[in-house]
Amino acid sequence: MDKNLKIKVKIANRLYPLTVSNDKEEIIRKSSKKIDNMIEKLEGSYAVRDKQDVLAMCALQYATELEGLKNKSLSNNLVNDDKINNLINMIEDHMKSY
Image (cartoon, rainbow, N blue to C red):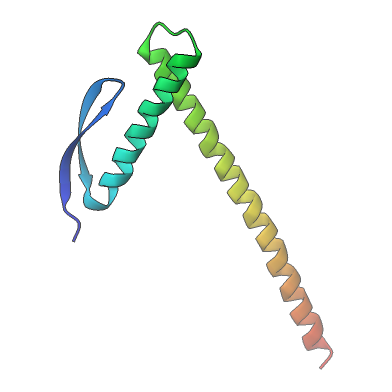
């Protein structure tokens, strides 16, 4: 049984208290660290005045990455569907010959 944990994650120098399930804790901690690393990288690359701007750029970058992965997954599913349909057609054609 998963128990909920109370944790604090730090993003952009702010602490956020969260209640998470055991199996999500590591993912959330890694994600918050990844966000902080991206913030640091963006602040080093661009002249930004406000953390909100950096957070928006970070969110946009990760959302874009996620959309790309979704599109790639959909494309792979279509290719797999075509392969399955081809196999079904081959089996049906073979069965007709009997």
